Each structure stands twice: as structure tokens, then as C-alpha cells.
Length: 299
Image (cartoon, rainbow, N blue to C red; front, side, top):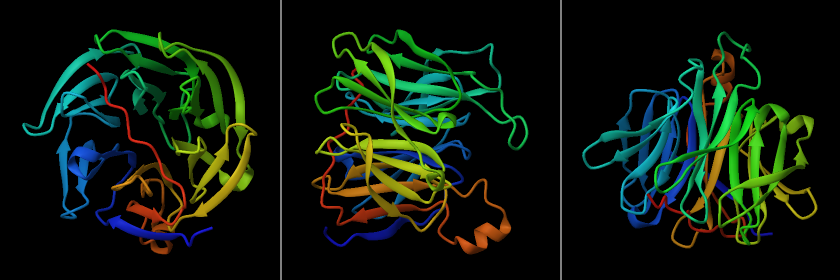
């Protein structure tokens, strides 16, 4: 095991940092701050953070082949033109569910954007159950509903052979695996892959490494864990300097660095005093494994 090093690279604190995406063409990490309604980009060469404000809570961002980004905000899919700071709506969904919003999303190996929804809390600890769904935005801008009756649609990724889709519904405290048809983008046959241990708390964002193992951020568990999808066993735990760890992705010049987002929303004054780095973005080096490049939305 090489020696693992964790450092904070983005000191500007995020209320709810999420959905980190490494953008090779910019040497940058793109991410969202859901509750601040911002899409941000950290340039790893200049250390500069730029943000674009949007008009709703933005759950996820992904690269777009033609440049700029595809985002899921409020209950709509949209394009973000970074240079002009312009958001163009593609399609609106779930207008009958005013408390819902999009959460995590990611592009599949064929350039389709998968993103899911969740019900917001109406007061602390209170939310309508089974109101979320998982959608696929196809390159022709049509939308397919993949799953419904979800609580909090969250982390997602695909196996290296593209035959399995992995997905987190946070309140199930589990990672699920589905068969995945690369040609159609359809998923089927759900099974529980990994059930979280009590101290791991709640599953959030997720990514895959070049060995086909999953890395899962544990919100309120203050850690990232590595899971073997073949055996369903946890292989490794990396404890983080903040408790509300939200998501992770690989990046850097050879995808050997892991970037981990966190949040400070949900922590009271006493907790914040104990966690001065809550809401920052961390870089882990020395994991001894690399990730794979992110896919780009084809539409």
C-alpha cells in the first residue's frame, strides 16, 4: 500500500459540494454547489475557482462533447455555455412535484446523460418518500424514465465491460447493481451489491477505478470506501477530514488523483467548530490505483 495523502485543494467552502468531474481539456475539476445554485470549475494549474450562478438547485454537471456542459437543475435538463454563462433548457420534468429536484448524474459509455431526482425536505428530517426517479437524457434530447419510487437517487457508474449499471438510492443505505444494455441504454434486474455498515452512515456519490472497483462517498460517515462489485465486499476505507463527504472522482494528468467533495450544510455551530474544513474539496494521492476518463454527453 502506498502512503495515502489527503490535502484540501479548493478552500472556498461549498454548502453542498457535489458531482466532481475531471475535465481533461481544461486541466480542471468541475463540480456543483447544490444549495448555492452554482456550477464551479477549479483550474488545477492556476488554482483559480470560477463559478456560474444558475436559477435553481443544480444536482449534477457533466461534460459535453461539443463543449460546455449538460446540467440537471431544479426538475429540468439544460445546457450550460461556460463562456457566455448561458443556461438553455432542454426539457422540463416532474412539474407535478414542486418539492422535487434533480440530484446526482453521470454520462454513460455511449454519451447518454443519466440523472435522478429526489424530494426535498419540507422541514428538517421530513421528506415525502418514494417521490424520486432516474432518467436518461438521450443524445437526441428525448428522455427515458429508468426507475421510479426512489427516495434519493444518487451515485452512479458503469462496469468496465459496460454490462452492469451501479446506482445508489441513499435511503436504502445500499449500492444496487443492474444489468445494462449498452445498445439501448436500458437497465434491468436489480440486486443489492453492498449494504452499508452502521458507521458508514449514508451512501452518496460514487465512481469506478481502472481495476473495476467502486469508490463510494459516505455522507455523515466522513469517509470514502472501496467496494469489490464481484464479491460485494469492502476492500478499503479512507477517513476524510470532514464528516459530510458527498462524492468522488478520479482526475489529474494520469487519473491517479482522487477528488472528494464535501458539504457544510447540515452541520450546527458546534460541529462546524470541530470541522474547519467542512465544505472544502480534497485531493487524495497515493491510493495506488487510477481512474478512467469521464464520458461526454453526445447531444
